[in-house]
Figure 1 (spheres, rainbow, N blue to C red):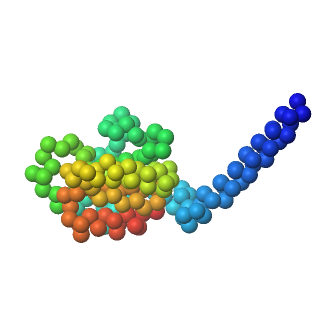
Figure 2: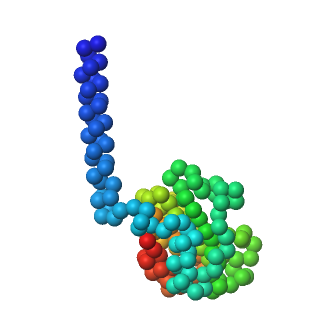
Length: 169
């Protein structure tokens, strides 16, 4: 019994120290806060902001848990909302045979609980598509928002999405 008390006390002190240290680094480690007031409420509101700057973007769908082809919506560390969009500058012939909502048709916006989850998703996508040019895409992370843009757009055209994403939040 005497040995259990010091071990329990040490465990409680260590747990307290870890809890205190993690609270101070959450918003200061990156210099940015992921407070709800600074992030869009959902992917639809993020798209509205982007569409105001990129007139060729048109909303094509809202992803739900029932229709999510990736089965990621609402799962731990995955997006909390997602929309897909088309871009009128992409030729129909380039995307024939792709499914409605495919990033190749224009893009997608995924919103996460925090910026680290959005960064992780972007890194994963880039790693998967790195060796498959047919699946390549432009990915822009701004806070908790990941804007995925079709590789059928030129770098200059895609840069308009990057610029618009910088204003989200």
